[in-house]
Image (tube, rainbow, N blue to C red; front, side, top):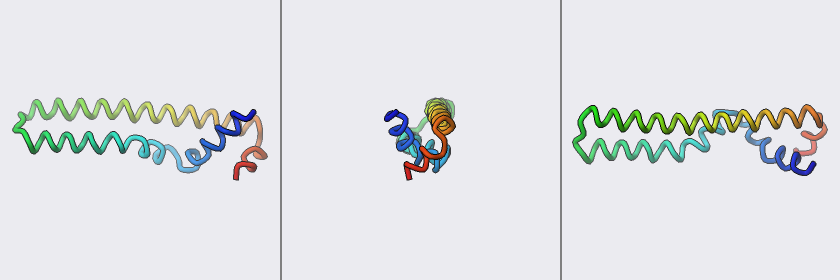
Length: 97
């Protein structure tokens, strides 16, 4: 199937780099602006400790959902990758190099 070959060629770099690299590559663009926004609020406005904790926990919760979704996406891609490799064998993987 050509779709299997396409998937293997796209997923193989993710497989080699691993879960941490995959998650950081997609989560960092969301984490950095969130941290900068929190710092901006902290410096520009005098916020009470309660308001600041609500902002920090809300940001943490949102970023946690993002990271969990990235981890589940990586595991589903890894599962499909291993199923294709198990069905097709190592000869398919050797063709992608």
